[in-house]
Image 1 (cartoon, one colour):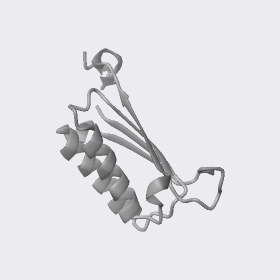
Image 2 (cartoon, helix red, strand yellow):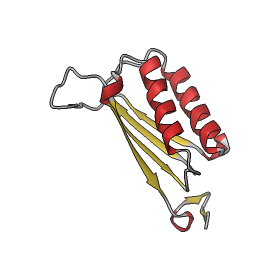
Image 3 (spheres, one colour):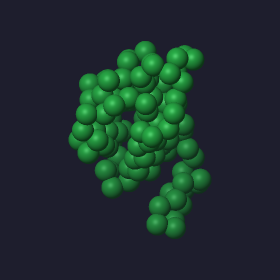
Image 4 (cartoon, one colour):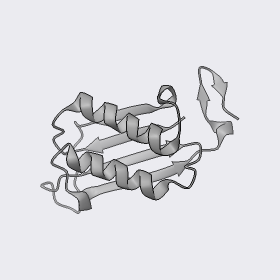
Length: 113
C-alpha cells in the first residue's frame, strides 16, 4: 500500500497528467498494483525552501510496505517527474521514504500483515 504525499509550491502544468504519471512511476518502480496506491497532491500550502519563498520545489513523503531495494530509482523518477512537469527546481525537491510494517497498514478494514 504505497502512500505518496506531495506538498509543492511549484506550478504543475497539467495536474491530472502529473497525478496519473506519479501513480504509474510508483507502480512500475515498486511493482505494486495501481489499485493499492494513494496519492495526495497539495499545491495550496505556503512553503519556504532554503529560507527563500521564491525557490520552487516540493516536500514529498513516500510511504510503502517495503521498497524492494529500489529507493534510488524511485527518488530519481519522482524528482524527474516533478521537474519535467512543473517549474520545480531539482535541488529544491526533497523526498522522505518511510518503510511501513505490514502489521500497521490496512485497506478496506483489513491489515496487510
